[in-house]
Image 1 (cartoon, rainbow, N blue to C red):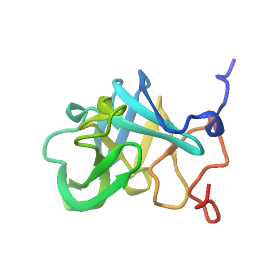
Image 2: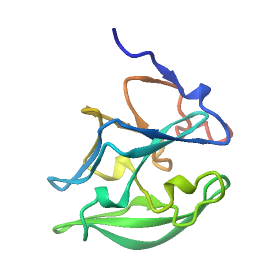
Image 3: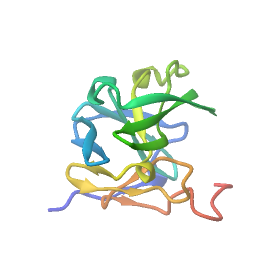
Length: 157
């Protein structure tokens, strides 16, 4: 029997952090750049989950600091990372919260990858679809139902 669908409209606000044992993986430039069964996912109303990888799930030398910083009202200041694999560079492909605000300490230093800026992201072998709009980094799988924030006309949600 298939697993029940999750509605992103049942996710909480402020967002929740949930440890998961799912096999999550990121591929770029013909190589695995992140792989773990020890991730966290952040669940927020109207958004597909964002998966956060432990730093040791990413081989050394693939990430270089980017200048960009953003501020999340819940998690705090995010730092961005360029993904460098051979002669390919994906600018601001990953982000982390070095010093997250209270309630989000579990993801301190963990790395999230924007699925539209890498070749492929997978959850338990299923290739994810990037969250619409290009700004948010949620991972859409077949077990989710929306609609999802990010597409045109959803900025006020």
